[in-house]
Amino acid sequence: MKTLTPEWTEYELVDSGEGKKLERFGEYVLVRPEPQARWPATLPAKRWQAADGEFVKARGGQKGEWKFRKPVPEGWVMQRANLKVWVRPAPSGHVGVFPDQACHWDWIAEMTKRAAGPVKVLSLFGHTGLATLAAAAAGAEVTHVDASRPAVAWARENQKLSGLSESPIRWIVDDALAFLKRDARRGNRYDAMVLDPPKFGRGPKGEIWKMEKSFPELLGACRKVLSASPVFLLLNIYTTVLMQGRNEKEAQQLRFWLNEMLGGFQVRITGGELAIEDGAGRRISASVFARAEFSD
Image (tube, rainbow, N blue to C red; front, side, top):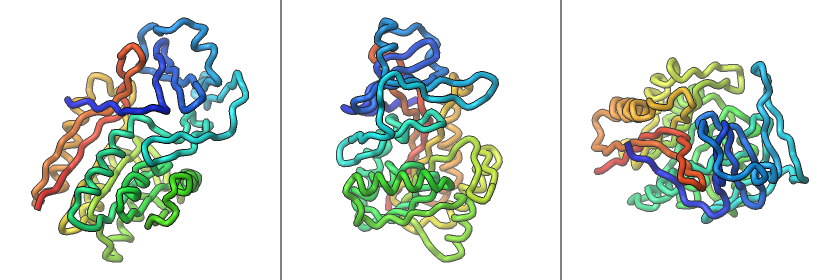
């Protein structure tokens, strides 16, 4: 299985081990849980203790909390190539940027620029918008959909921060399936799609999303809004520690689903996993993906 690791200057997985990862986001260093890191840490304890903050999981299934050892602003800016993002330690333990996804941002930009004409991109489960902004910066017209109003607001801040305020981006707070069904009735069509669904989630009106049940219906709805001359389609699924050892099968399943969805098109489908390596070269798997590239 093909594994992609991104290139960064402002992000670094400094070390990992003992169920945690030591990460640098710009000028700040954070410690977060990482169930995959079952090995011993490489760096001495004092390096870990020097981190600016740590997200500590609570016991008994309760939410965790951030514990800061030094003054840290509510948010700070990170940059990669032409994109900028606000980094904010959130109550969930996330910070608004998923560094492994930079591999996808590069591919989205490349595919958009390579297209023969204008590209209309649909970004579903778009979160804080880096995939959306990568497409927009490359010249695409983008529709960004996410069920979380705060996430969409964060993405719009990133748009302004990246100097893309004039780019044609339509921001939608909605359940993905509900949006697709409505857009199909309106006759809207897209030349490219980016899908990054969670294993479980809720829409803005309480809609339940369960990957196993909802995903086939989602792909069927996506097919109905796909243009007659598509350019690319990206499907990304985040991994968990429970998937370790099954990532290759998961990637094969994604390729199968895309192949079923795209029957009748001349298309090349590839897949693999995204991962981040720490300073000792140990790999943390982040997601599995499938990519579809269309030909005339």
